[in-house]
Length: 482
Ligand code: LFR
Image (cartoon, rainbow, N blue to C red; front, side):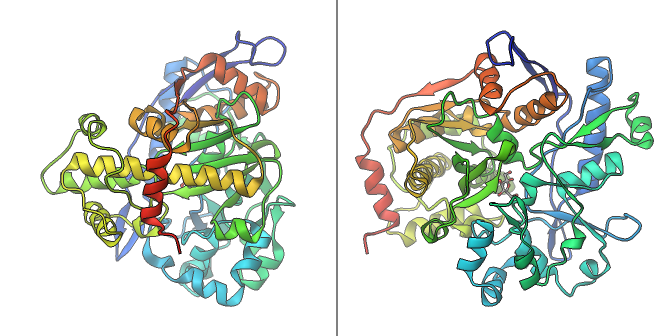
C-alpha cells in the first residue's frame, strides 16, 4: 500500500486533511506443508514486499518518505549467529501446539500466567510454540528470534528489534509495565536473550540496506518506521470512533472483538471469559477476544472448490441473505475450527452435536457462518462491557468484513447497537497513520488520527431493529442453561 497523508489544520482531523491509500501490489500468502508441518513461505512473502516497494516507488515517482510493516501475530523466525534464517517459520495453525497449553499449566498455573501477562489462552501463543520447540535443533542453534514483521524489517534494514504491540502477543509481556515478564520466562525456561530490544510504534527502525535499494530501484535514504506491527494493533488505530464509548470488531480471517482500554483487566472473570489484553498504540490496551472470523467461510470455499464445485462469494451472500435467520449456529469462538481442512463437515458435525439440523447447500452454510459470527460478536461485545465496566454506544467493524453487508447488518441486530462499517483497509491505514505522525505529516493523539479517518473514509451505518429475542434464544442453543 502507498499512503499519502497530510493532517488537517491545527493537528489533523478538521476535515481538510488528506488520507489516501493506493494499492501498489498484492501478493498471495500460501502456507506450505512439508514433512507433516505447516509453514509460512516467508521468502515468497519477502519477495512480495520487495516487488511492492519497487512498484510503490514507480507509482509515486519518488522513493517513499517511510516504510512500515505489519502482519499477523505470534509467529517468528529463528536466526543463527550469522543472522541466517534457521528453517521456515511454523504456521500458528500447525498442530505442534496441541496439548501444550495443558503442559505449561502444569508448570505455571493458568491463573498465574494470566495475572502476569493478561493473554487469552490460544493454543498458538508464542509461549506455547516455544515450549513445543524446546529441545529441538532449531531452537538450540538459534541466537535470535524475530517475530514475522520484525523479520521482514531486519531483512530490509539489517536492524533487529522487537515491536511492542506484537511482542504483547507472545505471552511474555507484562501489560502493566509494557516490558518483558522475566518471572514468566524464567519459570518456563524461555531465554529472553533471544529477543531483540523492544521498540514502540513510531520509533525509527533503520533504513533500507543498499542491497534492498538496488533490488527495488529506490534511491536512499529510505527510513523504516516501527508501526503497530501486529496487524490488529494497526487496524484498531484506524477505528473511526468519535468518542470513548465504542467497541470494535476487526474482521477478516479472524474477528477480533472488544474494546480499547487505558489499563489491562487481569481478573479471574476476564481469564475465564478468555479475554486478552494485547498492547495497542499510544499506551492503549486491546481488550478483546479472538473469534474464528471469515476463516470459516474461506475454508468452506476452499473445500467446495477442491471438490470441483467452486462458488462465487458475492452470489452466496446474496442467497444467504434470503434464508431464514438463525436456523443453525455454531460456536465461532471454538478452537475446534482452528486447523485447516474439511470445514463444511466440521460445521455440520457441530450443528448436529447441539441438536440442530446440519446446513445442506453452500448458501445455508454461508448463512450459518454469518449468523454464528454475529452471535459471537454479540457475546464478545457484551462480555467486554461487563468485564471492563465500560459502556458502549456503537460497534465499529473494520477490516475486510466491513464490506460484508449481511455480516454488518446481523452484527447490529445481534448486539442491539448501531454498527459503523469501514474502513476495510484498516490495518494499512493505521500503519500509514503512525508512520505519517512519526514523520511529522500529521499531529495528535488517536482521537485526532481518527478524526482524519472520519473526514476522509467512506463509512456505512447499520441500525438495529431492536429485536434481541432470536439472538438470546440462539445463544441458549449453544450454551444451554446449567
Ligand atoms: C489477525 C491476527 C490476530 C492473531 C492471529 C494470529 O490477523 O493477527 O490478531 O490472534 O492473527 O496471529
